[in-house]
Length: 252
Image 1 (cartoon, rainbow, N blue to C red):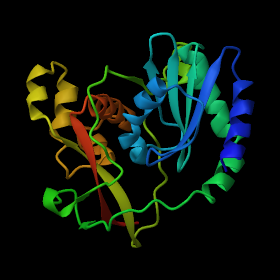
Image 2 (tube, one colour; image 1 turned 45 degrees about the horizontal axis):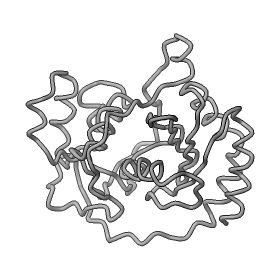
Image 3 (cartoon, rainbow, N blue to C red; image 1 turned 120 degrees about the vertical axis):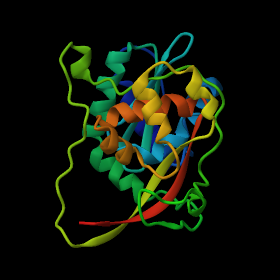
Image 4 (cartoon, rainbow, N blue to C red; image 1 turned 60 degrees about the horizontal axis):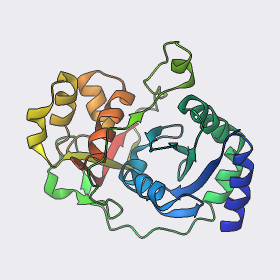
């Protein structure tokens, strides 16, 4: 499989005009293939705790001393990383093209990925779930302090146009109960609230209580999901937020 990822990496290099390194990870943060430097791999690993809550097309950008890193979820369980001298806007467009052009290939590769051991998850019956009933995601690692990360910029925004941040979902049929796996952001350093001046950030972090998912917070505050992901992603990288996993029954 590593050989196949290396072949894809060679093709990806042709999407950029400047020198680029490539890595592929699963959504638990395990490297499947990497030509990144140790510094770049370390920067990516710090963000891996939020991969499970990402949707296809979600991404983050991080500036290093001489290059830019794009971390982009191209399929349900594969995340691609580009470390390049290209400008941020160019990298975002490249990530979108990878998602579109290699969709079938990534889907085939996902079926070959080894299963990742996961601890048994305790059912969370409602948004007001008790924190003690939610078992910590074994893939989550405590992150170290890192600089704020620029996230979720679309090509349309780069060109000066207003992009729709919210993710539209079709309404499922009513009456069917389904069990889904969900992730709960939890604020582990509440002292940080005293240092924050942005009201919306305070509101979001106050709801990172182990009983609200990203979708819950977005719905309760009536703000786009992308905005919630930006805030929680930034503070997760600083080590102030960790993610817990559980299951929830929903009615369709």
